[in-house]
Length: 377
Image (cartoon, rainbow, N blue to C red; front, side):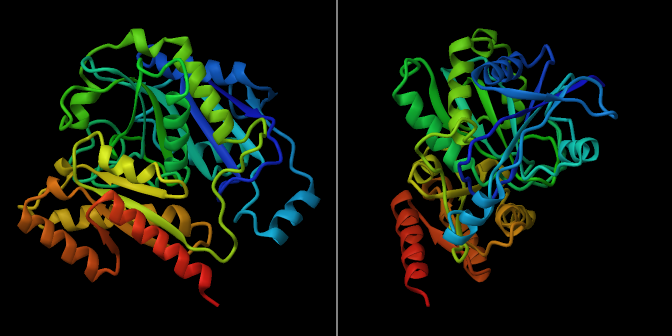
């Protein structure tokens, strides 16, 4: 398999939890959006080439940060860990069935990625052009029709909500406003990996908000969106800022060494998640998995393991860095029958999780938890 990997020169900015970020794209002809986004990102900023003896093609490597800046960051408790490196890996094969990319990248380079961002198409023949972002996994599915492992969800990238906010704000202020919607999607499809991850996509939003992911993955061509250079360059601008590749005045999400991560998990609603998106657009919110209603079959007891697996996976993205976690479960109240909603609430409360029935209530719980932490001895 032909592989190319690149690594960007990064600034001295600080970013939550992640030291090494791996951006993954493909040259597969069925995913033209992925290649367009990768090329836009490569053109957008400087990258340094590298080669590895066990890997065909190019790889890239950036400089380490000066030790004085790392010590200063720790003293001031700017963030949990100091960011320094961004890699890109350009594959020939498709993405959603390309399992264990994180492990393979570490075996080749000796570098362990802390989060993985996949650049890809969003496949839906109907609806409006859209820029989307979502966690990955197969909640509530007995078969992995589009890669990954049945009923398993890799940890979501801790930057999921931050990236969505940046994409939403930048699109509203750009020439793409009115031409592209911005959407947060429910957790769906592969590949499988153990490193926190997300998908960033260009495509169309299907008209049916309850469409299941296998329908979205096989619903025709939107080549006009996949190859739009303005959309690809827009994503490149968003990623350069989010990954702090070129620096800038904004600092990104921060936690001091004593803070807990308060993570919101979305439950219920359609595949596109406007109510969970309302929660995620609040500054400072961290977002975990989003389980649409079609992933929860209350006629079978297996829905419980689906919910708990998604919550555990969401928390693990922060716990792997030694971070304590509080989980807030935001329920799309109108998406559930009364009896099902009460069963779900009982399960969540019995496991010690906060439960919110509206974006406003979720925001109140998150702010209250932060205030409680700020006055704790």
